Image 1 (cartoon, each protein chain N blue to C red):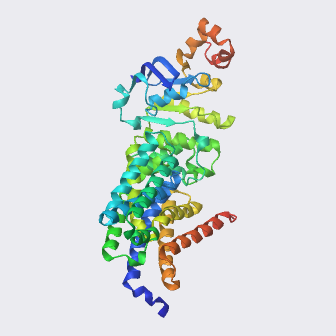
Image 2: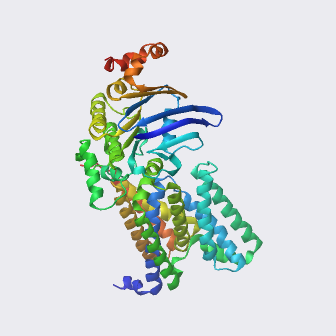
Length: 270
Length: 243
């Protein structure tokens, strides 16, 4: 059983733990975002995080400390643009996304010294995650999932139909701001796992796979969570055994799960 | 008791006037058919009553409270005219959808869902995905959702549009039962003037401004209304009210 010896390595165990926690969180939020046709919000927030990470490196501050508030502010800005400026949701996301990338590129060109660090955030490096980052990922993921469980009924109502939810007394605007902020937290955590370029895959693909099979909202959340965790476990293991980049391998495993689920759905019922 | 009071309500989409100086009051136990031509402002009026559209002038009161201060939304059930726009990819069972409107958790939640489903005789659909149901069944599920809180006021926007004649009869019979046996006040937007005449007690006829609001009987006996609507509308709705 020498092939399984890698499971004893501390960095592999840390990658499993942090990756599974962040992937589970992203998948649950992903189901909600996909059903609300906000799949691209992960891209927008990861791009604004890219700009914020560059700013952190430029100013000599731990980049995640800059990226987290920047992503939360950007998520609220998307809601404001959508509601007050009466833009389509995807147009609001596109604006935030473009500004984030542009800002990051300008900062990177102004101070070329940190380009290597910045580009490491583009593709993530879960195998280099520290114990304190693992702890942070687990605690934040548990907190965010607890908030989602607490607001479950309001989230389901607003995801199904915002206006009906509003007439039922749900504070839809407040709920949207909470959900966007939680998504921002999830995106910033996921950058360490799969990198800026692939964050939205962690949000969207497990959710879409789950929606191929689920017959209820609750089942969709559970399937998405399972697929996300399985993809991290398989992806990290394959990455170590085949010397492939971990983030990209996790995303490819997710894609194969999606293909499997899609074919499963096409099979005749009887 | 006055359930809905509207005074001098005026609303425009940008520069297009939709409602002009509309005033009326709906009492507890009323069953009001809200009729009028396309673009007359019927849906806008209902959306204003529910706080879904902003920017109107005038005064709206629900259960004696100004709309801005009204918070007891469990007293109101709403069935929008959007069943056909239901996202078929949304994974939700009938019990999940019906339970959306009910805030309390625990056994009361299940009890409320079962009661609403049994009332509409669709309790056999409890665990079925909503996307797998026919248009008529989906319409009943959405009505069950509107009824799950046992509301005192039920607002329906063209509820019969997705129904075949048989479903339509059982749907309106359920509404009649709600109004007559449980005293639920109903406001129903409809183009189906035959059903309106059969089931509703009062007619609110709107065409940007309020043209008529009273009992069908009064409408049918009014010479002014006879000359104004030329016989078409009266023929359909007045046969029930010629006493």
